[in-house]
Length: 406
Image 1 (tube, rainbow, N blue to C red):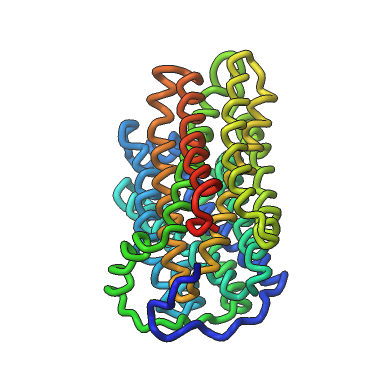
Image 2: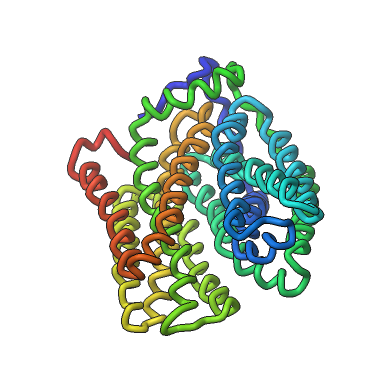
């Protein structure tokens, strides 16, 4: 099914195929931008006392970043359907650099928290770059292009936490924010020079744009289905990566923060799945790939149960498999959505990722209470429940009407 163009203008002429260097630049940009969401997470214990945040409120550093990202997905990313995309990206990256500098020099909690809120909002601009890359690719190469760009985004997510820990040891937590601000300035210069313009074909006002989000979600079965799959899988992703460091720091492993960072880097190997998944989707294997990805997450969490007998190797394999499958399914979903009407791609991306983000918030929110109350057994139970629910829903796609899914 292809949605009609809601603007009434009709689709733009087919663009030229995106070049490999530009794909690499957009992938690197997505990774660098999204990494800003995660630098503060392992540094809360350092940041809180320095800016005057009491321990009970220190988690606001992460919470406000997440709230900002969610606001950006729903309020800023849709602008990609009405504002020239290059200009929008450059403005957002510039504001991000300013917010990072403010965070780096913040003398107290209030300006620091305000800065991280804007870091979250503006970091959502990565979800404009992804549909922009999809727009520049041909139909036959769209999955591969999205996979390559999403691979860069996933690398940013997975490497941000260990990188922040290492840099904080060398230059302090404020140095981490200074370094990222410098990176954003350099990135803005590269994008100014090399990112092409993309003028959306839409007659919407901003109010109409935001008002259309619910109708797009309501009237697009593929979006709802794909969002549910990835909601469940990303809940598992956040559940695992919030609780695994707690398990590794305690009995019987007693790993140091540096060793836990190495463990996180091992899990980052799963990011290689994005280009692979994109190629599979382009060849028509998106449906079966989705089932395998959901089943893979289920197997990963089942395998992680061996941590109870002291098997850290099982946990490493589970981390790699989990990251591999979560990222692959993300690409399968985006490729399906970006085959729909070009005029609404930014809104599709914003709604899709916002829903996934809610899944991640659920996973991280339940991780600590489950772990403190039931240990890894509680994490294992929830970790199996999420992909099991997704797999049961997937069976309705596999054996139900073929018209409901792609």
